[in-house]
Length: 480
Ligand SMILES: Cc1cc2nc3c(=O)[nH]c(=O)nc-3n(C[C@H](O)[C@H](O)[C@H](O)COP(=O)(O)OP(=O)(O)OC[C@H]3O[C@@H](n4cnc5c(N)ncnc54)[C@H](O)[C@@H]3O)c2cc1C
Image (cartoon, rainbow, N blue to C red; front, top):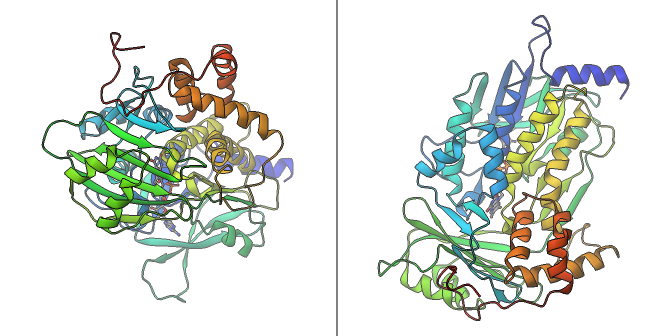
């Protein structure tokens, strides 16, 4: 791209300096969380934003076919809550008013990891555990109430308009319209792909004669099965939730977390060859195979209020739009269309919010012309820490496949260190807090090498942890 191309490209994205330039129009493909939040930010810069969504949005919080993962547990990490709050001030309080539970970690949750139970010491981070349909609905209500955003529902993007140098719009077809009917073109100065992990943008770019992005894939073969329950009425649960983390030698995982309206999500997971069944009896039996019966016993007393739903598209998949290539100006990818993660780390929604903040920053930076490439790199950088955690952990899973599996030698000392971190995080509150900050995307992985943490990791013994799931949080009186 020449300097003058870059400047022209930048002008289509940045805030208009004078009132006289042509009206700018941005199109966002997909109204999931990444698309909604990107549209919200673009509306601060463009004259008009059109959000194109293949589904029709439900009036009330409800599942929809374009987001099949919304039938599975979704946690919002602290970094995601903070980013959401910066984008939509007051949203976390709104979510709490809608009955979204907020849980402290590790004190509220009984967590099994690295073959050990976490001590339930004082919380150092909090998660929000509302259902995905409710979270989407609350964010959608806020974003779409803003000015300059128009929604086109029940309409599918089927391709891009323009050429290999510049994208000039999208091709649209009503959902369910006769295939073969000529799609109509919606012109735009900027197109943002937020259509999720199954994005077809690489093929659309190729059809313009541009270079599709290199794709990095790492698939642990993880399968999810989830159902919603009401807890047994005989007394309060002795915990706010249960979390069983699989590892290379123990392929089963589980999450039990409260959602709004006094209901609970139970998600069971298994690596390749240990997939959880999707019939109710098989689901309950699978829970009995977890390393401890605590969740199975809870399930036996609880009442299912939904069928069991399965989900298998859980690979880490990253599209390298950030790398140089013959790609057109005026096209960006964000959210899972750019980088999708193994969901077990609970990162995707938070990364969607962090990416929207990165978009805002890149478009507002007075020192730099926000060329497509620059903004795309900022979006890539926003997803990178989550990728490093998710793909880094999945590389070690036996049976992991994909072109991103190959381990580098430099990983070995890091793996050795991280193994010691994991072992100590369960019982040493300092190491545990540092580990949780990284996992919640609130601190970089390098913070695990801070002196206070490194001392315990390198020289400290493996600390005491409870031999059984601790049914009470620790207080000053009970702390060891
Ligand atoms: C089983 C599972 C559990 C998860 N758990 C968590 C969790 O605990 N915490 C967390 O933070 N994240 C979790 N995630 C990830 C999270 O769901 C996503 O990262 C998050 O939804 C952001 O995705 P998105 O907006 O990029 O895409 P999506 O939510 O997939 O939305 C894409 C949207 O694009 C629309 N669309 C697609 N194609 C077109 C088209 N051609 N034209 C028009 N519209 C189109 C779809 O209808 C949809 O509305 C989980 C994911 C899975 C699979």
